[in-house]
Length: 196
Image 1 (cartoon, rainbow, N blue to C red):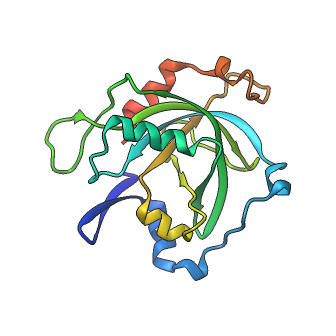
Image 2 (image 1 turned 45 degrees about the horizontal axis):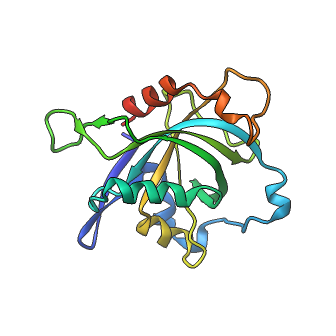
């Protein structure tokens, strides 16, 4: 299982197992750089499928979750890979709010409805930022808060984007104008539904 709850103060914080190493090592060991125009000019676009997972103990209403997702568009997100903080972005997103995602957790014997949101997104990321095929671990990203360090933001984030798989049916790089023609809504929902 890639995601787990960690008890912190009076709440359970949703973490990617890959983020725990960075938390254990601490901020002084984390390698990060601030995104600038030169960095942004090296990024590539790709259409990706995934699921947005709100923090588990906060019981955000759907309207609030929708706002959380929308505030991430055209803002920097962070992905932690080992001790490297990688800046990526979502230029546009197609969330599937009307789809119910079910899930299982350790304390529930049967699958139940969740507040997770399936999506397709136009991602900008470094050329070597490779996603799996829907069967390997997803890459986790969350909104970067510039008034807080990356690890403090990680512990206080409202939710996370689980980036599951890229759209590979097209050879040309998508644009902001045509990326929605690349989307396969069935695949978007399928990946989100089976991701745990």
